[in-house]
Image (cartoon, rainbow, N blue to C red; front, side, top):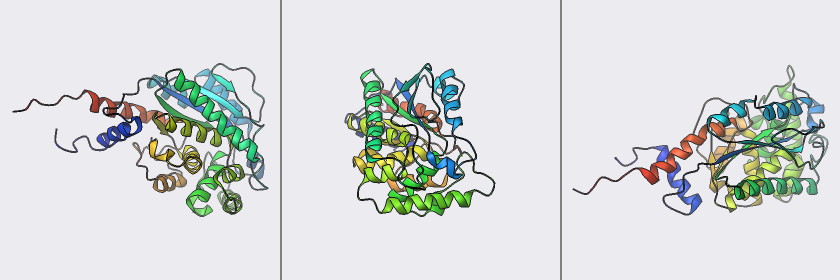
Length: 315
């Protein structure tokens, strides 16, 4: 075919070969969606129009198969696993939900550090453990998702700290803010960025301004990269997790595939900061791993193109 005829798809195929260390790369056929869930103390400071109880309700919705990520994952043949890293509302046993609680949500990042260093480290370890379990069970592509009311506030603060950007640049409406509350949310993010900028190392930044589910996502990305398994990054929450992962384990972002460009302002900042080019741009900002999941067929097609498209015989 003409050089470059596959456009971005060819770039993805080459990237997959680099991740796998083999050409052609193995085509992923067993994707798994892992959704990490946790609550955020900053919700009590007016960061969101929604109460923290919605996080638990959404976990139950995913368990029942009724959430957007449930529908999209079924479309691409991916099982969905929810990991409770720190949902504030107690959860009973739910199908497809793994209990791995580090704490009952975070403290308010506007009042002090969101997590202790030990909590942040434990949450990263949860992500590494879950990713390792799934890869050992045969997962050949990991799709990360998130659930957590208030997590766009934490994500904005982390991205601001890691990318060196101001609160007004990284703060969007997320799932919704109270009437006239965007300026207040920016103030909360600005407080956390200022505190994080005084931190000496990446884990301390993550503990200061992050969230338990964000730390767990970072752990999953690190484990996937170290095992040469492709992983697809979703929107702004996953982008914040990838910033943390790449700071904790340099080179992690070079193994990432950006699923889509979220309409949250910090999402484009992350993509530019880490040098990633997203596959889709659908004005999505739902989270849960939805945009990453929708990108999976393109990732699979790219690998199959490199492996299975035949060469013309010489003439």
